[in-house]
Image 1 (cartoon, rainbow, N blue to C red):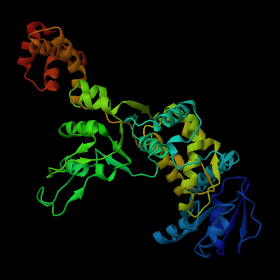
Image 2 (cartoon, rainbow, N blue to C red):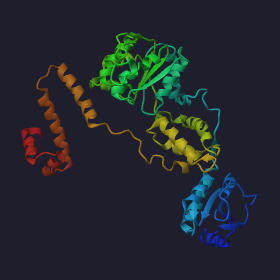
Image 3 (tube, rainbow, N blue to C red):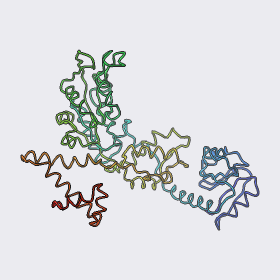
Image 4 (cartoon, helix red, strand yellow):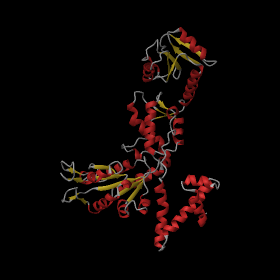
Length: 456
């Protein structure tokens, strides 16, 4: 940019800015707001001599940088509220001014290549799980539509944030139970002590604090659908009771001897590997088979990156009224950066990124400058806990050993674990036994004894 505009009544401000401008940049000074500032021009405005309210008018077509001598937060916040791209304080520093100008020049180039938002790619329903046209999501839609017409339990699998709840809602909406209750029970969110009463309800006086009878969620869902989210978190003690309900569609409220009959369709979802949990004894095999008569896998966003533009469109239209500045589209660089991200949080992460970009946008278009935090704070899945990882290796071995009728399993297993552990730690310490003993938290003599038993 070879010219910038300054709006000020302070002659010293003019000299100060002129002295720090990069070479070759001309400065046009105005004592009143000019009526013909070209679109995309950089305009510095002295908010000590002009009202910050003028920024809103100027920022519709120009990049506005507010300048103030004041060391208070109020002018800064006021200028940002009215749409200033940046607020800087005097005395002006050449490094700060050059940095802003370089950033705005790059932003101006990015804004030359935009993608307008369009209603054409929006779905007919408000279910963002089925937004898009990638082959993988089209397969989900076809399977979803087929299963909606058949009265069977459905298990929806997939990573956190892939829209499993929305898939469940779509099944209910497309089924003969449309318009009937759709009741969601988050098995991970309800405390274990309360979960049974939430499911089945209770009679007055059934326990301390039961001052009046309460209908359970299963009764409320009668004639409709009940959705068990995070079913893998259901305590073992309740899994048997849920299994009985699935078999009979009947249950007893807590404290009641009267059986309740309902007619509900059961849909469940999990981000856990239930088949592995069955092997580990943490989930009932008979319940697993009862819940998974039919399954749908909600794909990760990594598997359907072709749908990112459609999803962005959807979220812009959903949240565009939450800010004063109209969002007209995105830059191609913005879309490219979204495609390069790994999306560990899937659609939910994308939704939050777009909401944040809309809130922080300083132009009518979402740009890469609103994505500076993308990927900076890791949302990757936490590492598998030690008990989980050990059990996944040990339980299959135990099952095979029992099937072969082996004995002395304890001794054999301990020898194998010790050998693997000691080999690895000694390799790590370059055969330094003292350091290995410290890492393992055992006496050095104990380590030597184990090594002397032929374990290494």
